Length: 351
Image (cartoon, rainbow, N blue to C red):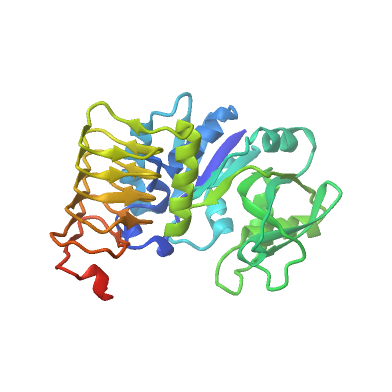
């Protein structure tokens, strides 16, 4: 049995951060989302994993995989020249998968549920597929399943009038018949080859699709808000609510409010950090108050007296402000940004 992770999407809702790195490489609690997916597949005993990528991003993705050092796993890069939907991304892996069954994960999703149930179901039940579902409050934003007994009988992608609240959350198991289905479908109204259409084709042509229902945590790291929510979840999960500070970092005259994670070689001076802050290696913070935020590698924040909340700072970003202001600041800054905040500017309504 093989594994497949889809990582070729553009990540438009996370710009400007995704102009300089693929969405699946954005860190949650200082670990790329893609690495969580690799580790999850490895825990199920999957040893051969394909990753569908934009060919221009192969170098940076290979670098992060080498840094993660996944054990007992062979990784194959598969190119998707342009993103045309999940089903089209799966189609690119047809030669890699061959006649094997496989587990499929979306590269921007984090799922707490073990995948062993999907693996066992597709192996033992004789079904053509099995899908992980969760009950949601906003079914119009998901692929939605209608079920009868232990089978899925209908799937709809982001329906206007949902038949249920059972959402597809980005974890699947298939046999090779999925490729026959993908070759039969046409692009949807939004111009994409939808995996829900391919699955529905199998159902309509005597295929059998089962499901598992989870009430455990999951997150689609598709927007800044969801990214910060995922960071919140993983910091609690990984540290049991405590802070993790690398011993090579310097923390001087600071207040640390658990949980936070501080990477290698950071320098923090006269600041209040936390709760729910992640800092990658080489970050420098001087006289700031930061909570619920993510700082990527070598970001620098100096003398910002306004509290910083729900913010993301890209790699090598520099922000400095000599003034005092009681307004709360929010920033979404891409790699290499530099800004200088003049006295009173944050409180004036200027953007």
